[in-house]
Amino acid sequence: MFALRLLTEGTEGPDTTLQWMLIVALVFFGLMVVVGWWAGRNRKPELEVQHQVQDRHEVDDLVKIEGIGPKVAKVLEKAGIKTFEGLAHAEISSVKKVLDAAGMQMMNPEGWIDQAKLAAKGDWATLEKLQSELKGGRKVNP
Image (cartoon, rainbow, N blue to C red; front, side, top):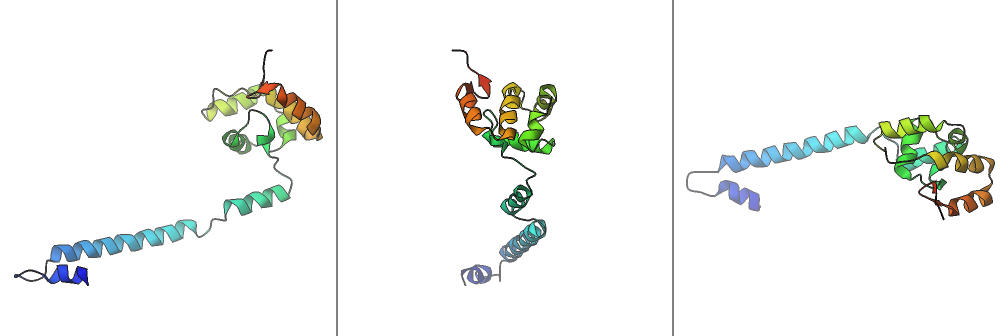
């Protein structure tokens, strides 16, 4: 009602500028709704995809390794290192190159390999003991 009154006020007739602005705004809103629908129509929820992959035992939670956070885990996964076993058999220089390419030059993967070997074997007690001696995935000098 308020918009119609604004459009019809004045002695010289309706203000067509406001009318055009209203039409443009509605068209823009409709376009955004269509684009949003189109962009999201084929996407599965991320959690659903993650559960499907984990159910097939193709991915380990690399964040359990001291020094690896969620961002680093995603970088490693994109590089094909998805399991503790894969990380345990990876060359430190190769992992470093992957991290450097992702802009994570400050990360040091040297301690990750030993941790991954223990995790791949399922030796969680020894892994926990080793991690208590680490800071950021590296051994701390006493």
